[in-house]
Image 1: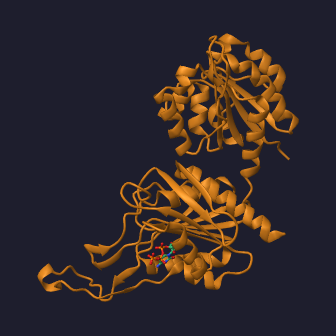
Image 2: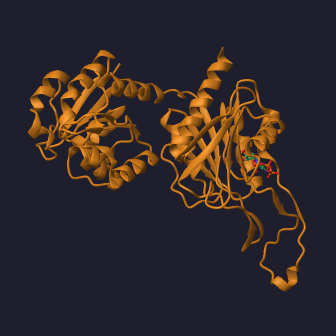
Image 3: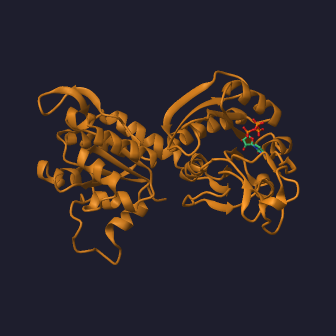
Amino acid sequence: MTRTKVALGVSSSIGLYKACEIVRGFQKAGVEVQVVMTPNAARLISPLLFSSLAGTKTIVEMFEEPAGRSIRHVALAREIALLCVAPATANVIGKFAGGVADDFLSTLFLATTAPVLIAPAMNEAMYLDRTTQANMDRLKALGAEFVEAEKGYLACGDAGWGRLAEPEAIVREGLRILARTSSLAGRTVLVTAGPTREHLDPVRFLSNPSSGKMGYELAREAVARGARTILVSGPTGLVPPAGAMTESVVSAAEMEKACLKAFPKAGIVVMAAAVSDFRFKEPRGRKSAKEEIGLSLAVERTPDILARLGRAKKPGQVLVGFAAETHDVAAHARRKMAAKKADLMVANAVGAGRGFGTETNEVLIIAPSGPVQAAGPLSKREIARLIFDRIEALLEKKRR
Ligand code: CTP
């Protein structure tokens, strides 16, 4: 069996001496470590130190004679189960956030689909600078995780925020992420996302402002946890998540059909779609002039997909619903949870600038019993992670 491999990126913060302990920590847990240093880090400390500790040659240079036919950063990008960058300077964080790939480490970051853990270390002013903070927020929204810097004595002589977190904390977080990469292995997850469109004719429809971003991040998170992931998506302008099987639908009826097909195999269903509640009773195949249509159009209810899945649910299946409300958020979500037989509800307040189409979300996660979990504002990817943590806890409870 091949051992789990982690790439440890080391950049030029004085805290890099602590990276030796990080190498040891991963090794103690049976994880193989390949150290990648930035050229500036290699000016502070010899790569030989890390080569001796890790037992493999530390990579610094981008352009060395290739050992074989493989391109090194691409080959390593595929081999690793985690990219841990500790310490990460403001420069490295900025390069990652901006997609700059001008050395081995930043190229590896772009080339890998493995999870990324970043432990920043720098002077306090640089750490608290709004550009650095914005870069970190961007990386979090894209799925990277952080072990935040601590407050303490800094190399510049100041005491303040910016000190590298303790190696044990970084290794612990790294191992937690590694365990999570297969926490849903062998399971099938069905996620719905986006709005539905209920057409009156080819150019007119009923819909809502859902962007689909929350559902797409949920699908990404399911893939990251090793699940076979089916994403049933209404019309959105989003790039389909890599690794998920995405089925595009338009109407509630089409979404229902796709969900019913996937449901028997799905152990977990997350209904993040904002399904239109109404459709036209008499849709037309051709566009008519507005005078012909008149001012009164008969509508009927669309199928309630979640309620239907709730009725068909088997004991082992976990069903998660969403509730977007403008008021009395928790109360409405509880009512819907009971009516639709969901195991969890994710409720959020929507209205001016909130919920729909935004980059962040603020939610309540509600179960039939127990306290309500409030989360956010956080990036939708971080919210997706919290939702799957709750789902996994629920699966664990069902197993017992
Ligand atoms: N839902 C569904 N099918 C529908 C409507 C909603 O599957 N026709 C699902 C949504 O995907 C969501 C949950 O039900 O997970 C709650 O959606 P929401 O629109 O808030 O609930 P409704 O039952 O439509 O209630 P309301 O009368 O407040 O619109």
